[in-house]
Picture 1 (cartoon, rainbow, N blue to C red):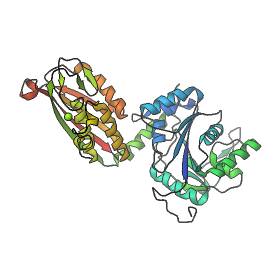
Picture 2 (picture 1 turned 45 degrees about the vertical axis):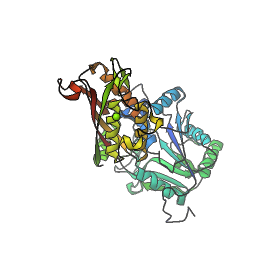
Picture 3 (picture 1 turned 180 degrees about the horizontal axis):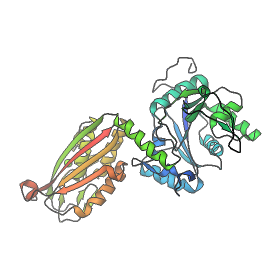
Picture 4 (picture 1 turned 90 degrees about the horizontal axis):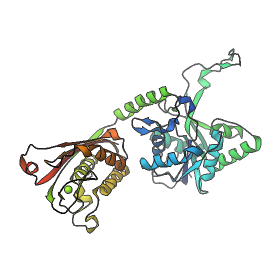
Length: 401
Ligand code: MG
């Protein structure tokens, strides 16, 4: 029934297992940098991380990343740092088609549909992915592309024009390309048999005589190949994100000083004679931060999610709770744009700890260091903070769906 014309895909519907191969074993040499282009940051988040994250959808069952043999550790560390879980990272081959074939072999047998996507295309939209999936169920093979805007010339080895194909018939192919698993597996088997060399996966399906449906994607879905591409992608991304509504949340918390407790602020142990009293580790800064994030997402406050009455949270590191809050937001498809945290304490002096705090929060929240600001202030001896009765913290967070 899933191949019936007009079938409309609904999230949550049983449509068979879906696998994704992220081809990330390219050389990246055209960037003129020693580093593979997929590791370069695009607005603070590495290109590869963005490319994979677009496929982190509830209806996608498996993701396999194919990387260079000398970059396996680097890819794993990167995915870990940015909290992107994939099913496998496997070693690629010399040619793109070898890498994709290794990726196909790494998918589990039960996969019915396969997306193949370039690790260097970070701006693919959810709409394009969903449309590809809808169409592949009708056509078995789908390529995403855009009509070319320039007139294309075919030239000989001396740069003389041989002919000019009709522009109306010319499209530039991108990824994702989506296939029924059986079809693409057979196409690869035939390619091996005949020694075919291709630069994209649709070509193999064409070669075995099967039809491939082209669907129109977006001009913004560029492949990051040159330093200029990264600049263009930054502009596109800001335009895409700029069009989305930003949500804001505020957080405020106060804890009283207590003897015989360590002072923990933003996950960092501070050298001070006294700590703060509380059910958890009393990390007042992280509490304010969590409340700002929950507030921005419309998810209530930390008291609702981690009640004082629950023994599970007795003495717990608030940083672990922050991790849970970040996951809650991710589940609701929210991405953290930035946070600004102010800690109000007469003593101790917090300036020497600010960088450590930012680094700790950046790691746990899986956002760029630039997205996190931490400040500390005194109250010039006034009020409860000034009398050193306790520490207060305030936070503001902005998030984007
Ligand atoms: Mg608190």
